[in-house]
Length: 268
Image (cartoon, rainbow, N blue to C red; front, side):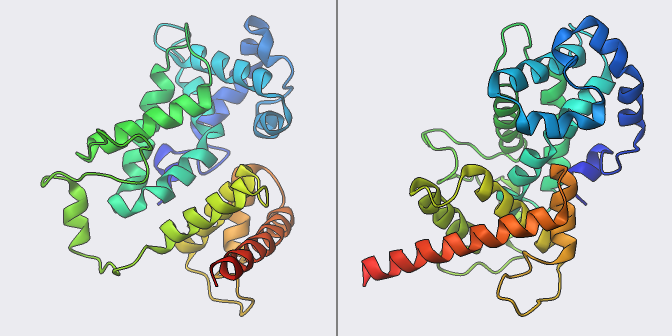
C-alpha cells in the first residue's frame, strides 16, 4: 500500500476530496489567496507553475482552514495532504529501509502535521510539514538523530528500534545500498547543474513506483523506470501525462550517464 492509499487519497473521487470540492467556492469567498485557482482539482498544477510566495500563501491558507484553532475543517486537511503526496511518497521511499510499515506510519504522521501546522506564524508550509513528518516518523520508530546535522546520512539506532527487527528479514550487502548510491549520484548531478532538484525527485519517485509495481524489465537498461506502471503512477501524482514523465526521465537518465562517465574518467 502507498501513503496515498493509507490516507484514503489514492482515488481522486475519495470522500474527503469530494467534500473539499464542494467547499472550495466557500473557502474562496473567505480567503482571497484561493481565488486564483478556479477548481480544487487545478491546485496541483497551479502550485507547480506559481511563484514560491504565492504557492506558500495558498498552502498556508489551507493549513489555517485545517487547524483546530482555524477553520477546523478536515476537508482542508485532506486537500493539504493531497498536494503534499509527491513529497511524502519520496520521503517514504527514502525511509523505506527503516520499516515495512513506513507508508502507514508516514501517512498518519503527515495527517497530524497537516492538521496542526502553526499557521499563525508559519511559512514554508510544504517544507516544514514534510520535515516535521520525517521527525515524527523517526521518533515513532525510536530512532534518534542527535548529533547528526544532516539528518539523513547517519542514523544511530537504539537497541529497541524497529529497524533491528526489520533487519532480521533482510540481507544487507557490505557496500552501499542502491538507494544510497542513487542519492549520491543525484547529489553530484544536481551540484553540477546536470539535473534540477525536481529532476532528482522525479527519478526517485519513479524508482519507488517501479519497485512497488515490480515491472518486468523491458531490456532498455532503465531498471523499470520507463515501465508504464511506474510512469502512470508518477504522472497521476504530478498531474502530467505519462509521456511527459518518461521523456523527462529519459533526459535525466542520459544526464546521469554523462555525469557518471565524467566521474569515472576523473578517478581513473
